[in-house]
Image (cartoon, rainbow, N blue to C red):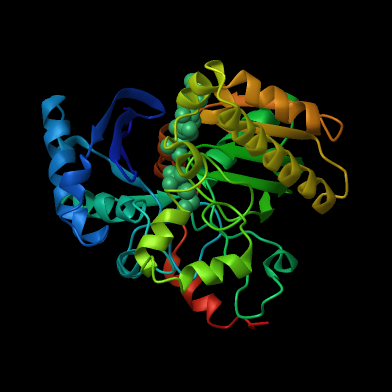
Length: 368
Ligand SMILES: Nc1ncnc2c1ncn2[C@@H]1O[C@H](COP(=O)(O)OP(=O)(O)O)[C@@H](O)[C@H]1O
Ligand SMILES: CCCC(=O)OP(=O)(O)O
């Protein structure tokens, strides 16, 4: 008998859900949330019941019932302290920390909460896996020039781990043995050095690195401080601008690469410059991780929605192919990856980790 698994992936404007029988996707739905619907909530956590209702309606419309489920898994959110990669059972401690939304608010914090709300009354397990707050950094990678502000690990972990496994399979070896530089190129970008099974260094998808279709990436700090005190923005507005209203959105008013390409095709020089600048910055970030990996890089992997764009891929490839072969896996595989994580636990191939344990160990850690 196959295991029935509901996968929930909440994003800023939609909730994607999928029903899996073992690792086979039976159906998938993307439930869009209109901005005016979401704007009535003061924060992400307040959207919980609203999104749960939308998911239940969608599942019923598909003719399926929660009562047939063996597990529910959600995309894991931002928690502090962060956690190593892997599958975690959503228990009371994790629920408490997901609700806190510290140090940032992100729609994925609803993933574990929604999974638990569906699973608990039915006495089946709820999981999250490879959360965006996964922290596998080498300690040296956390150091910034400002002791009060160490690097926080925030990444598109699910897709990074999924393409690392895929590349390792193609290259014929254990994924924990390779050295890859992975560039997840979506609405936000994660560029990371993946060594011996860990993301040992990365940009923080919301804070620095290259700018992306909607995020600012690294900006001049002095000018940023001046902007903070300009009186133009409150904290929430500025955070939203940096991680949502910047990059392509800031320059060109769209986060869609295809729209930018239309502008370029019409002869828009500015759009062309911004597009090329994004490829330039991605290439620089990739090259910086070749130093982290001491030049011993098995492959560079380009993935995410932007990797569908052949011109962008060609520009980056031209600048970085001297480092290692470039593999391109366009799009993302988050839903399947979540289902496979839940399945490994249901089959007893892996044990779900405990976030309570992470919290306990973290308090013992020395702060630099
Ligand atoms: N076929 C495509 N060609 C070019 N760009 C694309 C394509 N599909 C998606 N994109 C771009 O990829 C970005 C979104 O990537 P995606 O991985 O779907 O991100 P997210 O999950 O972060 O929204 C957007 O800028 C979008 O325009
Ligand atoms: C916050 C890190 C993960 C992330 O940026 O996800 P989205 O691009 O889906 O917002």
